Figure 1 (cartoon, rainbow, N blue to C red):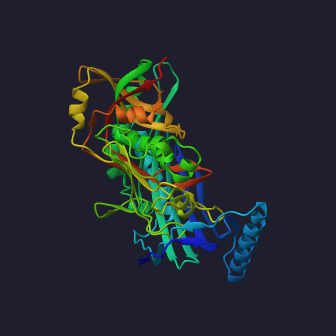
Figure 2 (cartoon, rainbow, N blue to C red):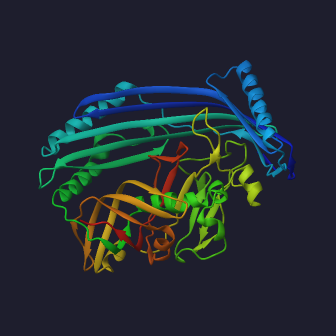
Figure 3 (tube, rainbow, N blue to C red):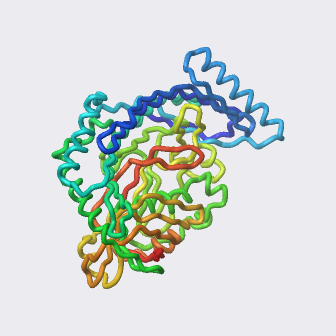
Length: 456
């Protein structure tokens, strides 16, 4: 259940978090098990806000005596900071949540089951695709369990479970140099919650191999501004990296370009972008955050609505400073991390166009399918690496292109969108980096727009 208290200046606020992180990772390279790791990290942390200053402390054990010591240390640290001068007390948003988040997935796999699958995948690829130079398969899952209490009355037990399988193939290009390509599947839960049998994965492995063979004969992309279709996987990254971060309230306070754009047109009418708290259309998303790591009940943040910038994601402090509604977006990755404003499930919503029609309407352009990395800053300028793409000529797909980069301003790229597909792709296989890693999910449809591509 949730409750909302009146906003009032907080002379004192405190919270404690007991936090466990469980991880599993197994990797097989060419039939050899090279990684077999299972780790557990746990601890307690406390934050205290006194007279406008925060104090934080953490310890790697979670007994009652240590928890009390950490609480006292956090308050002592806040007192020490207050010596820098008096600050006005903040009128913190005071929404609270009491409850436990439960997830019931399949029974976790044993190390033996994981090893057997990895071996079967390697042997099948070896016999089916003899031209491959190498294969690499990784199984990874992790679980976060947190118990948060604060002085406002929140008492929350939350959990995040996510899993991914990484399937990589390496071949030899026409020039003799190695080329590689990877397919990633991810889900909420553990490895057991993915459909991981060789028969289930065969279609995806065949598709991956076909793309890899196309890359063996790849041609260079033409440098300059090009008309492109950004596949859903890239649209999710564009939403997260290039437009999501500038809409985080702590970055807005730090000078993000989004700070002066609320209520203004920043994208095509076809673009609506939301950072979902936990569900979409009644269905739980991959990273459901019922209440954040400050004990605030989480709500969706509509960042862009029909091209207009609407809201930011915030924490108690940033919402108070900006005078906005708190979205409950404060999250901490590890037991010794402080909560920061972080995305949860960020997506551009699907439109009504068909991908095939979007391709057919391009005379000269590119279909960009996969990215290996990306970065952006608070101005919305971005650069992504493209690991798989194809030319489009006269409405038809042409040869694959060599690995390249795309760059530009998200504001300009989203403003140039003239078609949005009616499909939707979600994934939760990576980490967001912002002082500390964070588990997030990304979603999106295909977008047709214009951006700058690197060439030879």
